[in-house]
Amino acid sequence: MANESRGERFAALVGAELRGAIASRGYSAAAVARSIGNDPATLSRWLTGKREVPVSVAMAIADYVGVSLAEVMDRAYARLDEEVRPSSFAGMMEAARGPRIDPMLHDQDDYVLAALDRNDDAEVEAWQEHP
Image (cartoon, rainbow, N blue to C red; front, side, top):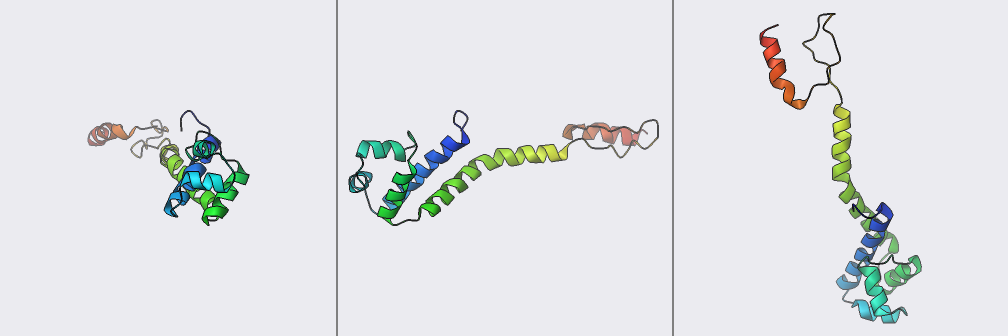
């Protein structure tokens, strides 16, 4: 998803979901294309994400194969969310950790907001041993 926008990726996932709906119901993409009045090569480009599927075509495909377009869109969005969530979640957790206050710095002159790395535990332990 690095070189494509979120919207472009969603469009490609809608195509993939439609392609899956066609196959899972025993149709061929070429037969569906002809049945809804489209060129099979054009439909192939839509279903493989090379071009965005027009909404009217997506509706025609969904109706023809007997699937809800809303369901197709929901599945595509869920896949998009799954692709984005791991990195977003990790970033959110990292930000939530933020700077920590060192509990060992309780002398008024030494009390500072210490932004400790997770790797500074050895320093804290050493300081605790020799206050």
